[in-house]
Length: 130
Image (cartoon, rainbow, N blue to C red; front, side, top):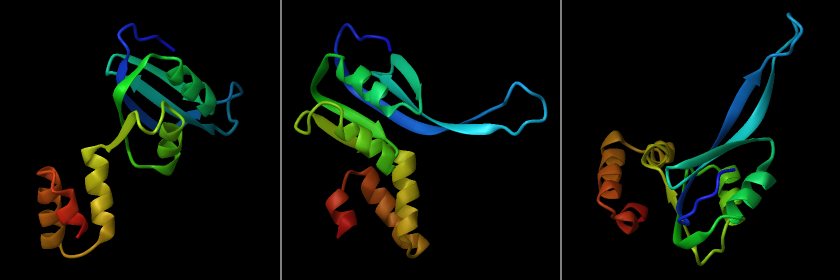
């Protein structure tokens, strides 16, 4: 994992699956989980089925205060963020795409959902929750 000389103020973390082929033709492909981390939109690394190395590598950086952790809201990502830095240091941010995706899971009329989306865009979180 690359090392930030300046210190890390923002971490972006995402996960997914990659399909791998076997060397022997005709054998079934298999899937592996991975997580990718990007530090300050400069340094990035991917970890295949090894969350602990991602956590340790990120924690070995000079982590600044506050540190912003941007993710997709998935529990697996949130659990990793809990292991990075300390709770007083980090602020977790849900990216806009996933915020809207989760908003539409709540349900309700299109008019109500659009209104809630507009309020979220304006930073009126408490009004949306109410």
